[in-house]
Figure 1 (tube, helix red, strand yellow):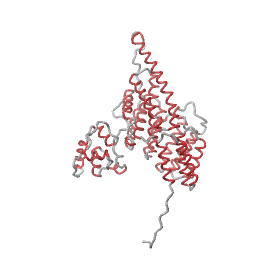
Figure 2 (cartoon, rainbow, N blue to C red):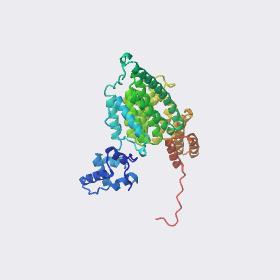
Figure 3 (cartoon, rainbow, N blue to C red):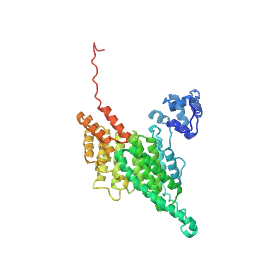
Figure 4 (cartoon, rainbow, N blue to C red):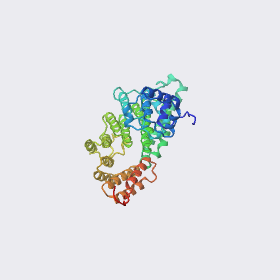
Length: 466
């Protein structure tokens, strides 16, 4: 058997071992001890742990029960979340870190160490884990006074520091301010590039800019105004990194970005941005088939909304509708969509008070999300009208969204019996997707291709029936 390696493996069990400092033999012994406590004799064999991690072998039920007992995972989790989904491999938020600028800096450094590792796409926080993350965030952000960004590290009176110390500090401040300005201007451009080319086109640039922001944070503080801008742009970058990772199907990396972004937005004092981050977590939960978690995330988003603009609250209502569609609650889903339409009514364009990251949410996007929700509810005729309307009104530069919504329109056409129209819309979706670096879009097109596959007639039977 290969030697154990020091680098954290990508399987959740390997990551769990690494976090606790367990060797294969340590974990085998722990499972055997807990199996005996359950009345099941079991040998402590390290080889089987290695096979679970590296060969994709699913542990037998008694081994899973013993491991769950050791990890204090409730038995019902094993029934509702197949292996390895029930493993508490990743914490929602970095454990033991204070909700202070120093804690956020540490969380960002951890993110940069682990942020691009996809762990085979397993979410890091779901069910109770996501609820715990929401409670911790709420306690820090909503239940107490927001921490004050530390005062300047340098004396206010230049004479106190002397000329030799003053000049380098002033130069450092100017350099930091210029760099923050470059980062701020870059975020918007990367969001537009993500719209046009997909998350895979921007992920590396996001990580590079996050590294620059982390370096600046390590050298600060610089003063309240510049510190707030630095935390805000770092949160913006982490939010965009989360969305890009989700678009690439790397859901553990996506959640690490989103949950770290919450800390950074907290230190920036930017509640609207926190609302957008929770909304991103909600939509990601829809993508991964966890509608209850999607509802929990949108509940947290609503609690952060405060005096959010009508457009922001309309966007949140569509997120709620998508989550409710996943649970099958049609009446509540339709109410959420009605709320979204009412809130967006009268918003002719992006308002001066709307956050900059919300530029993409307009009437066409609302129609597309409504159509997607109704398609999930099994209402293809209604969904088709909305999706076609969204495609007609949508910004032509949003190629990824156009590809996804064209594919959904094709699905709706197929389900109302218009196969020819479905094939035409699939052709449009494939054309929009040309050149995209968006595995999520590819997965949508692949699923459509399977649904469009003609059903082969059953072979004729010969002889008498049984």
